[in-house]
Amino acid sequence: MHIRFSEEDERFRKELAAWLADALSGEFAVLRGRGGVGDEGHLIPERKAWEKKLAAGGWTCVGWPEEHGGRGLSLSQQVIFHEEYARAGAPGRLSQMSENLFGPTCIAFGSEAQKARYLPPIVAGEEFWCQGYSEPDAGSDLANIKTRARLEAGEWIIDGQKVWTSWAAWADWCFVVARVEPESKRHKGLAYLLVPMAQPGVEIRPIQQITGDAEFFEVFYDEARTPAENILGEPGEGWKVAMGTLAYERGISTIGQQMLFKNELAEIIRIAQANGKARDPLIRQRIADAWMGLEIQRTNALRTLSSKASLEPAGMITKLYWATWHRNLGELAMDVLGAEAEIAEPTEAADYQLTPLQRMFLFVRSETLYGGSNQIQRNQIAERALGLPREPRPA
Ligand SMILES: Cc1cc2nc3c(=O)[nH]c(=O)nc-3n(C[C@H](O)[C@H](O)[C@H](O)COP(=O)(O)OP(=O)(O)OC[C@H]3O[C@@H](n4cnc5c(N)ncnc54)[C@H](O)[C@@H]3O)c2cc1C
Image 1 (cartoon, rainbow, N blue to C red):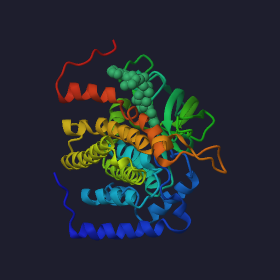
Image 2 (image 1 turned 45 degrees about the vertical axis):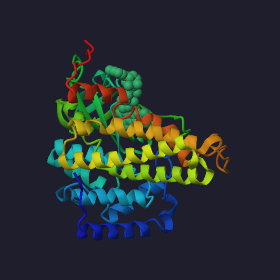
Image 3 (image 1 turned 90 degrees about the horizontal axis):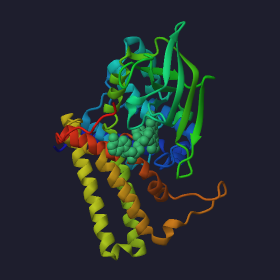
Image 4 (image 1 turned 90 degrees about the vertical axis):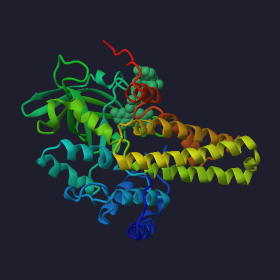
């Protein structure tokens, strides 16, 4: 499927590009190129201010329906939005989980009162969400969740530990999947609770990553509280809501991601031409492969987005394909840099500072894990797309 951009789309592209160029000058110029992979935890106050700036221009929640405060853009204009945003070097979005995961889940599963409470602050760039699913023994095997919640005097009281909670330290809220039926097993008896982060019962500890940064955290819930009405869906049906959120994970923002990949590949080609590695036939072949892989991602993204076939075979390969491609791109970047890849410059603020390509190389390993590891993706493709026998499930 090809997306064709109409004249109106192209006018929209120009309007947006001009807005971004203007907005990223002056006080926000410092944000150009920041907040991407391995850099997520930096310039948080500035990036929160940027979210408000986007909101004032009507550039948050661009794909949400207008009735929920979104901009209601067509698919082609959403593609343009993500392309131009990345092309302009605009910063990594702090509202990614709010806008792309929690918001659509709230629209699908929330009551009218919940939509009225939670959606407007997301649109306004004022409240930020994080995702509390994974636990020490519940990652790939998410149904093994042990965090418990009980209803007492009009409040949910939550006890347990979550891990790898990205952006927990700068989120206002977490959507937490917890076990509310004490004897329940696996995906039964869970609830999808909406928990404020700023409270004594929530302790957030950073986990340092190989990049030196900490974009994810361990989060301990020790008698943490949230009002009884802060639940999406019915008690006991949290699995359905949680899976609903995951279905939004591989949406249109992959287009913007591909534009970032394109920028990285362009930088690798620039370096290869400058340092002579572009004359190495093996490097040339890998660069050509990378370019083709990117074209395949774009074509596949457009056809799955336009057919809404996210769970069909074409959609199921998306995560495995881009995560593996990006990991390989990191290796290509280091091979093109050669000995230089091992040098990090000292700065006034720190002993050393990694370049964006070094950070990318180190961070991309994690992309083959989060959002469903490569092995889990292969299992799903084998079972659901190819109809191979199911792997044995835990008793
Ligand atoms: C950068 C990053 C950000 C994250 N952010 C969040 C977040 O915001 N919120 C959140 O809830 N979680 C988050 N996660 C957690 C992520 O969802 C889990 O890491 C992922 O689900 C894998 O779970 P695990 O780490 O427990 O590994 P495990 O499930 O223990 O897996 C370990 C290894 O065993 C393999 N494996 C496991 N089961 C099978 C199987 N059945 N067949 C074959 N191989 C198998 C896996 O592929 C993996 O290689 C994040 C992770 C990363 C790396």
